[in-house]
Image (cartoon, rainbow, N blue to C red; front, side, top):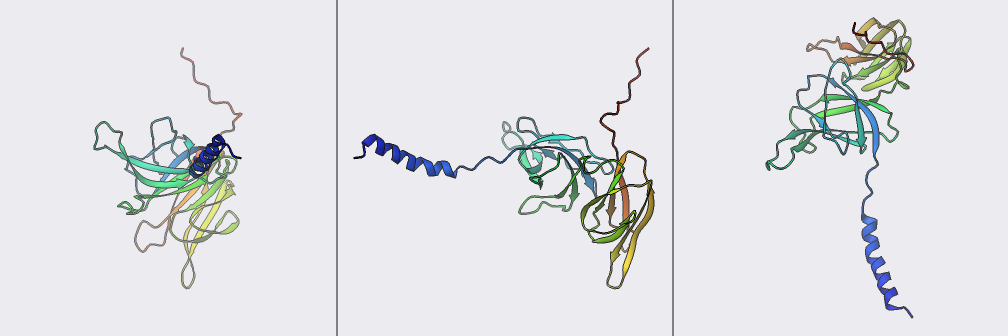
Length: 249
């Protein structure tokens, strides 16, 4: 014979268990060092990222030819970039207007470079996005000194050669290539009848640098000469001593 207290306990478990099971698990927290770059027109918007749940939003900076200062990120794998607008309620915090999103892979590297393209002049009606964001592994284990990555931001599939390696270059970052003192590069685009050369040059860079070779569409309409510029970063060995400051006399 079931006692009343036992029956009440079973009833409580039956009622409470489904509700507890429906509670979503919090998203896993990831930690990564982020840097940013801009591609294309200058980014004039003031864009923020909530880099840490217990800190104010971090204001992002964008440069064309060099990486930004690092941001130490701790939060969900979905990165939401936003601008701020005053709230109608003067006592409320500013409104956050999303302008771009990016997702960190489960096996994300310890350092991620985020490249921002402004692809729209008006916010997307569904997502509010103004930018596309492409991430690439920026850790020195994967992308060490004396190496080069080709970043195809032309909107075309390219076929070409870096040093002595022939390869197809789709949109985004390429594999990492070792960088000799003189680096021969050539890229072509396929037309209906032939391959047309769009860039060819022998480039030289200093030692202890790593280089992103950025490929962009032509500046002039109807031109087939694609733009190419370099984003350089010096890489120092961890055991190397930092230069000593001169003592005041």
